[in-house]
Length: 183
Image 1 (tube, helix red, strand yellow):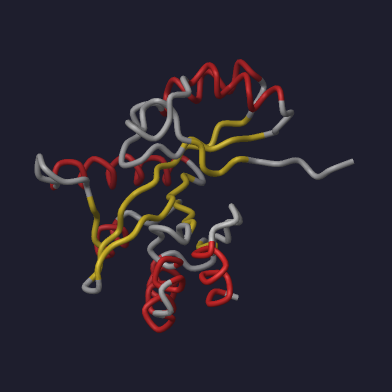
Image 2: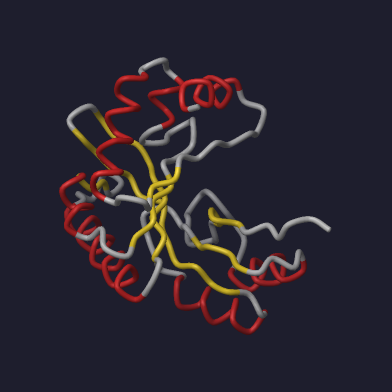
């Protein structure tokens, strides 16, 4: 018997131009695969969080609420996934997301600073991001290992014991390069 699989990066139709799956479709797919839990991580928003939670509970799947967010530092930016571990994390995630959206101008995607993350870090779990645009992995894929390590150490300082390095394997050369640098 295989160990249960849990999606920690699901995008719904609320991730504009990234997914066409509606929440009810996601719930049916996850339940059909007998996954015990699943995380919604729409890009730069949490608009589907309530609908997702309700649909997953009906489907017998534990909902995990999160978002894929752009983090910025003095060296640039990249995406991470933030997951709420508990009620405090959910509250902090909502506040973090709202502040990032309110600070964004009308012509760009929201991006949050490391300082903003630090102010809302309690109860949050961090996935470091994939090789293509990840806050930690993208520099590793470009052989900028010092920047990758610096960012990872900064995340660990903000969320000790709650940062996980993502390794993604979709057959892309960037992923192989990032993995070599991250291991």
